[in-house]
Length: 581
Image 1 (cartoon, helix red, strand yellow):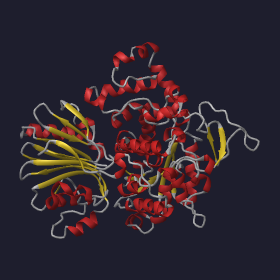
Image 2 (cartoon, rainbow, N blue to C red):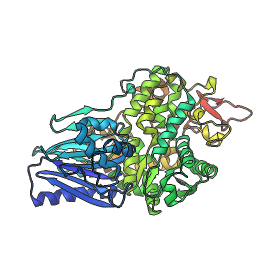
Image 3 (cartoon, one colour):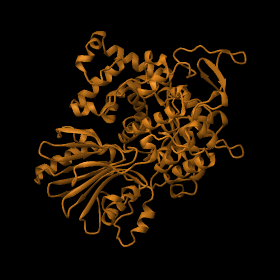
Image 4 (cartoon, one colour):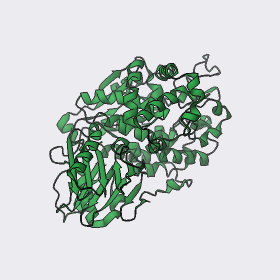
């Protein structure tokens, strides 16, 4: 992922201002170490830090139309750029960059072109003819983006808070699926799918159609001119990504250039559930597998850097980001610049363990809608910034716009977790890839129970974090928490510890407001806590907090099945009973 910074209408055209903007842009250099570019039109500055994935030789940014009256800085990938180039046959392209189509589409269609883009992106486009600009962010918010306003009347737009927080009177998250126009000075939603209004869909489940939609989403993300690989935790989502990528990799341009064996990467504590499962999947798929071990102390030592890069104090996000941050550094050291990952499936299909308690299909569907709408503040933020910290790009096929539309149109009755019918979480996704003749994955991996990333790398990771926080935050500090942090008051020592570090880097009230809050259990929204009375007394984002659901819950009281009080590999614990799936 690249880094963009735009300072627009600041009233200062001096060399001193240009130097200051360049200095701020360098705060984002970790996102794009391959090139730094700046385009100035009067008192408007457009900066870009490039991570070269497509056309490394000539695709430096900002990018322009033929006469350079339109300039654009983009973070992201446009997967249908070749098709769009054909539609723009009357235009002359300067580079092979997938993002150059944006400048020419704007010439042809004005700001109405955005829905034509198939990909993920954040961009700022400057029109020198009238000194106007537009900025936009992709449908779900896979790419990070912030907007701020200076006391001098300027508008600031940056991939990360650290590019604008010192200079803006107020700043906030740029909302996903939205466009901002300098002419109208307001946001307009360009992405309005049926699921966004949370209307209950009724399309019957078609496993082959769902499988086809996902395969298409993965295949388009194999577009690259540099070495890449897949993140493989051994869980369902990343394993499916790896399985589909491995099947279709051989015929790609990347395979012809870099070799036909797919590389896979996994991180975990020694002996963790993820490492064991990932190795088995890698052996099944025949990938070149890279396993990275870390210790709890390694993670604790990285916490400060992680919070600086991820720009949040949310407990769940920091727990998982630390591991991804460490792994990304190792991956980049191997010469890899892009990875494909499995984020988004749990939100779309109700894969988190608390969905076991959804009372009906209506509430199930509405919770998935709420989760997808919030992804830009959690998993997307983690995946984007933890990888970008080391100049690594992450791609997420489950959050493909067309795939989401397909998956969210299915009657949610099919997504409901029904032990009486043998349906565990994400059953419709598992069933779609349950191919007896040509298996995508080993059966027990295909039906492996959900492990949240920060759990699956090894349970002692979270326990170690809690112990470390307790040694740095006293009971007396906690007793005054509501006075020190009146907004999103930390309720645990771990949360208090992260908050202290965050506010050291980002003390502004605007920064504090960018982080979501509210109670959660096992990654639920606050609304879903109402599904089970026990959860209100066990508010923790770990999957193990879903009492009576997770196989290794903090407290469990299973009934013996087949002579054992431990559930088998194809069983799920629901309400304290092991049910064969």
